[in-house]
Image: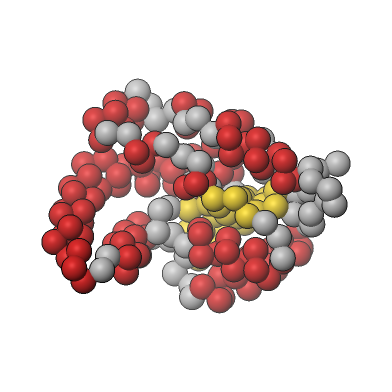
Length: 188
């Protein structure tokens, strides 16, 4: 018997990681983060554009190490109460999606998610790195208009419909965590 897997999905900058970390602390459980395993964002932009032009098949995203780690955590002894997964793909990625018992979608408008993503990057930049940050920002915004915004829409079309729970991503982190906890308790 495996521990249930609760996945948190939403746009980049939508609050997935913040919510996942808050739930992990409250529940005293382990969490996995898609960002620790994915390789798509390290690909050249042209490769990502080609993937989008081919139809953006989420199953082309190799997540075998994440899936194996997720299975290992869910089957650990002693059996955890549940395992949390912070993922962009929800159930839309065939191999990782079939492991999810409860999917929570954080419904954050794309403009707010973009603002949070930029704020996060700005917060990591040291004052001496201001010119590097400006370069990163220009590149990110150029790519955002070129193809990232389209991936947000695609994610919304493919991942959101598979969610068991949809939360308002405009809420403060604490309120979001309260609603997610209520949903988990009610369904687990």
